[in-house]
Length: 177
Image (cartoon, rainbow, N blue to C red; front, side):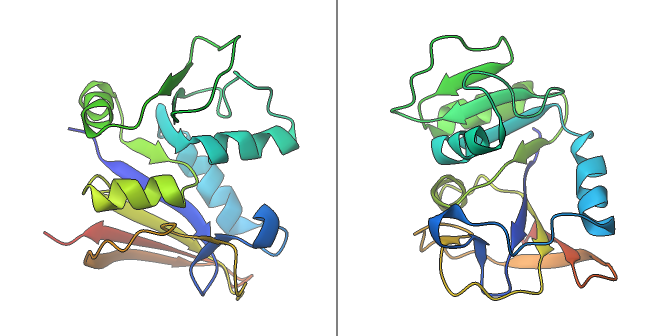
């Protein structure tokens, strides 16, 4: 079964976006961001929640279109309704069975894009296998938490660390067995 990898930018205080979904304080270009972008070609499947998918609309993503042209998209939501879905975009109800079916059928590990509440739900259900944190040298003080309102308790082991001259680090953690 394929791994679900939560690959996400985070502030030092554990936020993936500031107040009002503001990401302007994050490092948005440079070596670390290029490394992240080159890593994305290794995925052919992406999962995300409704809020993350809709976040892309403000950056030109058309409703129903894929955010990542090379990937099959599974948007988990009980309320999202879009008429003209691309062949590579599917809207699913949140369920452990559906996530496991996607894991079973994927050809590569699965990119968990964005997160907050959806990532917290996945964590609570033991479905995240690896964290790849693009740790930004900023403190936001509020916004969208890495795992939303989840109170799940999990141990992780640091397995890789890359540091870049702008202060960004990419930290890779595997779930402790």
